[in-house]
Length: 80
Image (cartoon, rainbow, N blue to C red):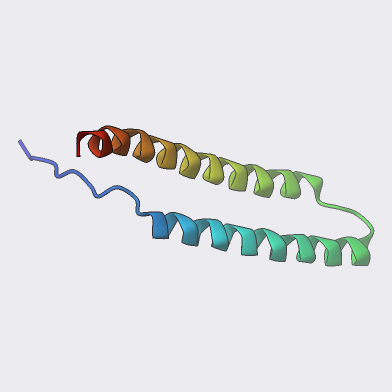
C-alpha cells in the first residue's frame, strides 16, 4: 500500500493572490458586459449569474479554509 503524504496547507499569500485575481477578473468582466450591453442592448443574464456564482463559491471555499486554519492554530498558540 502507498503511504500518502499530507499536503501543505494553503498559504495566506496564495489566498490573497487568488482574491486579488478574482477581483480584477470581476472588474474586467463587468466592463466587458457593459460594452456588450451597450452594443447589443441585451444582457447575458445567465452568463453573469454563472460567473458571479462561481466567484462566490471560490470565495466561500477560501473563507472556510481560512477559518479552519485559524481554528487549528488557536490551540497551538494557547499552549505556547
